[in-house]
Image (cartoon, rainbow, N blue to C red; front, side):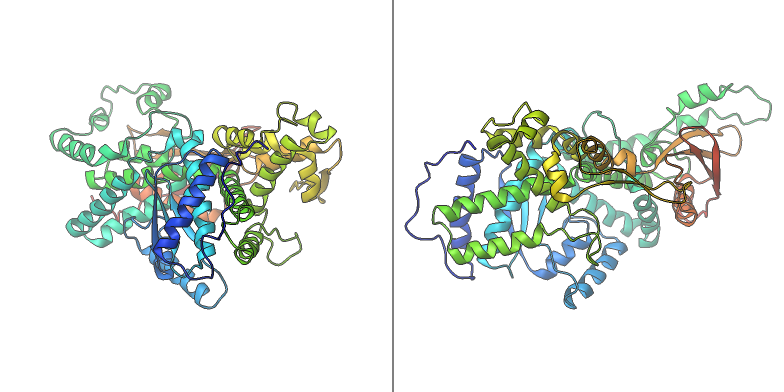
Length: 518
């Protein structure tokens, strides 16, 4: 590995014991920054460290990790659940929460020991921070400079709406918007939102709506048999820019019965959904990057005498807990631990770059034996997401270490089949199958708005393109469609269509409850 080793070995540790104070935090932060920047070449936003209590950490948990977010009853429900589990000792708390913003805000708990404060500072303030700033998905989709101002605007806007229109009406719109949140993102590159100017733009939109009307519905004929601009389905779809996969965006722009403030609430939820979209695609890489960074930063500090043997043992204890991967028959098993898989892949890349086998040289000729693992890792963190990262960097050695194999479970067959094991013929199949499990386009339902009957009953038509014959759960589908119908204001119909054959498999029809008001 290429690393700078000009940092001197210090005569005495930076701290001793478990107690912390702000002077110790400052000294340790400076030491971590020196190792992170000089040894690992990390490039981060400016850091802001906030010390909070466990109660405040629970509060931050409940609002999807965004302490500045607006109020909603579901956040309180999550708070009560997490608090009970925490008080009964059934669940621990995360030691930190970090916000992808500029400056990057890391929240650490005051109950942590000094060593844990050092660990989470290295993990969040430098590992996550570097990933947020440099990964192409975050650069493409999120606005780190504007998110804090936007959260403040959104919180204030929701509060004003509650005061003016009542808590119940605001809550109904947010309930519906949250139900559709995962279908409120643009999946393909387009102009990034400038969140800092959203407050000004909201005022401009309101002024515009006060002086205009919805031009789309002006074109609907008022007399039966009268002239219609919509002579065929294609022209109608072109007018509405269909098909549209961003359901919240379509409702915000085209729903005929929503008032201006209701459209703005949908826009708030849509912006938040878009903000979290890169995080859903990079869970393994993001946590793997942060875990690898905290381990290597603190290991170097230990080697240079900056932290004591006792502190290093505490680091190893916490680090081992984080990357623990239960076996498949362990009651604690819940799938692959993203920390374990991510950290293992980072370490494997480091091994291939510095100490490759002949197998590694065959599979990874571009960097096997290059000796510069940090450069390889920084390039991977910047240019991949989980799916493509696994496809590119999952090695046969790691497949054997995790004992991975590929099981095909076809509902039409009476038995499951082992399609590939960890041998020469199975490596590529296992790697492709594992990568697909991290592809959000594959694991999330492909639902699009395809048509609307403008000249008739304004029925909204959707299609779900079914893969592997996996239909939506009927009860869940109807519950979400109910929220969609409430926002649209008219009947909603969704057909489930087999993506391979085009066969129509199921149909859901839901009418509005008229609870959002005219």
